[in-house]
Length: 332
Image (cartoon, rainbow, N blue to C red):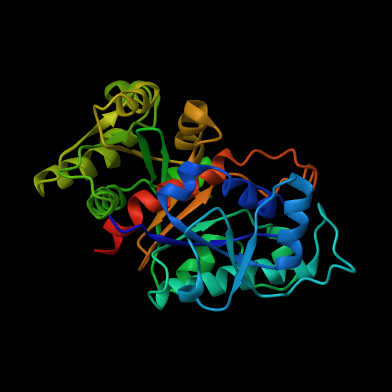
């Protein structure tokens, strides 16, 4: 079977992105899962190789077609956009925020032009982006704008557990206000369609409850009665196989063990806690609703340990492997 070609923007140069990227290329499972091309700066990649003691050749290319995937080598598109005279690991720097954005922008263009099948992204730093006056707070906002997409759908995967998020970066109080029957109905449809694109046949979904015991018939809150259940019933009437609201203290365990193909988490921490307690390092974020698939590590730039060869590459390895697993199906 043809392998997917994955673009890997190396992230904020001052963070752990370069280190975990080069370490990933030592894993034979990563090389088997996909053909990867790093978009970054050779000077920083060379530093990362030195710091990690990684003995891998770097094949600098200008076009994807020039890549050589026959052995253990890092195929790199070198944007040469970091001044090493002023560069420091572990610090917020304007040039690093600018560089990180340029790597992502270039990788998105490769995907939009059909040169690569997916993106596997490394950490970027919000403060560095702000210092560089980049008009986006994070990856999702960049992807949405630069691909002309609307409201991309985030999914976490860890082992066999998949989690979608009805709301994300909102206070719990504001998130509850967003839990309308219309939104629940819409997200069930969108999550179902996303699973189909990822190759899951006849998906079975569950919606997590908000209150203890999903409200216990109104004893512990009425959100399930007033909004969440009506949204679920509307989706069921449309023919979607969806259960719920299922109490949140059991639904994620049930999905992990095969009862459901995915769970719709109602708010940020509800799903994040479930995923990261399952396996913190192997929790991967996938962005659906774009013209191509994007996977991402679910951790930050870790400036406190950057440049010290402390950071684990396990999450980055899973990120590339998952992109390789889903990308070709997603493109169909």
